[in-house]
Length: 397
Ligand SMILES: *Cc1c(COP(=O)(O)O)cnc(C)c1O
Image (cartoon, rainbow, N blue to C red; front, side):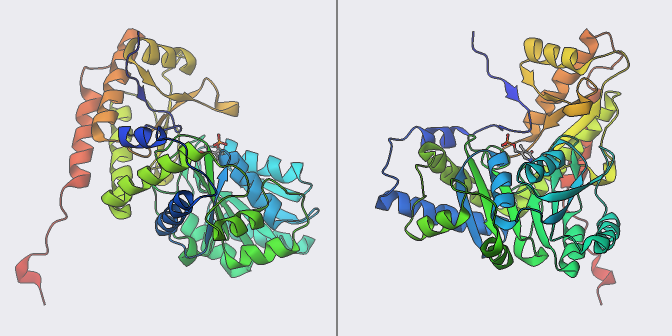
């Protein structure tokens, strides 16, 4: 029997009915005028949300494909680069570099902690001994641990060094503050099934002028992912190969809904719901995994009670309460669980998750008082969303 699930994994995210309906429209010719109009509208909307006037290219690929394109289009074999790794996705960036024969040096940061700008500065200084790294690769929002790296500050350090900055913002863009042009990000990757609330299938890659200069010098093999072909095709309102047509149409509808809400309130909603979620989880007696100072607005990781395996915990949550979350990745498997709150997520979604969490803990004989998680979440949310106190009239100068 079909029962609606509260799908709370960090992607694919919930897709609104209007977006699903858009994806069910009849096929259109991807070399025709309808598609050209669609591409123009989507590109403009993505540029608005990513805060860039530069190129944003739409690839039919998952986020990893966009990451691979970022590397293959800007680097050359033997190039020295620095990859900061504080989770599974940072590791993926490193593996992609290795696969392409890039001379990548990885800087590991304990999982659950953020990549600090001072570390980036120190490591860049060390690179001088090997003639300097050509590029810095960093994950914006490390979904595997629930950490938001301080990208604005990291960008400032990298910009000062003159290096190329390549960013995986697959699970950050469209939900957290991100200023591609102002911060000086050269390549930025995101994907349709994360905060954009569309089905999986598309990766978006933003390229700066400096990134295109790097493209001109890059000698890594590329054909399907050659970004010049995407740029040329876009000038004619199309894509080099057949795109995931239905996802493109869905994405346009999702972007329309997002524009209605406005970027600023989207960012605030994510921040407030993440806070409410963290407070609820803590009130249920569970520990947060990520450093709270850098807690992700789109994904929260938390520890299991002693002697509870996260796989068992997630099974009860799914089978008995129709709530689906993610486990730990890589070395964190079985140890933590992760709940996603990105895209078209509401307070009710998170309260539903927290009530399922309470019930599951009770089923697993964990002491938890009924309603504590929800109460704590509601209280935190109310505090976060109340209008800011007005300046008392008498204090005006
Ligand atoms: C989801 C995600 C990716 C890409 O995953 P795909 O499954 O290839 O779409 C990359 N980086 C981060 C941070 C992610 O959250």
